[in-house]
Length: 278
Ligand SMILES: [Zn+2]
Image 1 (cartoon, protein in one colour):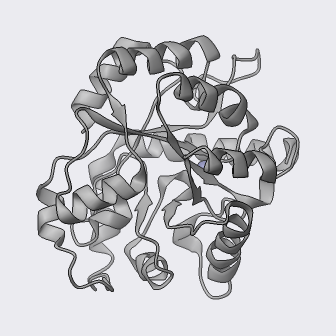
Image 2 (spheres, protein in one colour):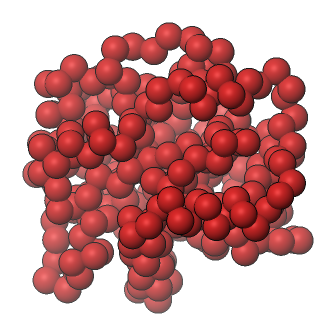
């Protein structure tokens, strides 16, 4: 996917990130205000109030792990963590006693109060970039960490993106593969046949590749709307991940918060933001 699709995609990501950072509370409020009807939760056993009361687990979101190029803009660099910085951040978290958890553990903790290891944290990777396989995964492995990789299926096997075999290997090594739609369309604009293209087919493809069910979803650009949430429930997704806007108190599992570990941050900045945001 290359230059043509890649550039607008990056620009959109950047603008979404800026939007999220600029005024998260307002954005969440706008989303909730436009929609009065509550989300249908299929499993009536889920105690939403209890979930909202539990302390949030820090979830980090990464895109590209590579050294900056001359033409990378300042805002693009939020999504591009340089290799040495990435290694330093991960080492700092390991040295600080963090334990990575996987989404099933997070789900069990949120829904049933199942205990987590001390200082839990979750690593998530969006957009299928190859450097997540070549750089990030081996680095996590050094410390016994695992991650959740959100794949946009259109890019599988393209230059600079992961192949089917690499995705399968991540899954076989104990990481979790989630869905990030087919081609990164904005979730809030999907309707009709889009759901099949952006949710059903990617799930099927990823399940064929990994041999495991796909139960987790990440919103492109982190953007979600209340009207779309039943589409995820209908398809039995257990949880969905946004960026750092406020959770939807009627459906916190489908609006789990993440922060982007910015390419501009050092380890100290990362630690400060983890403590402030979760
Ligand atoms: Zn994305």
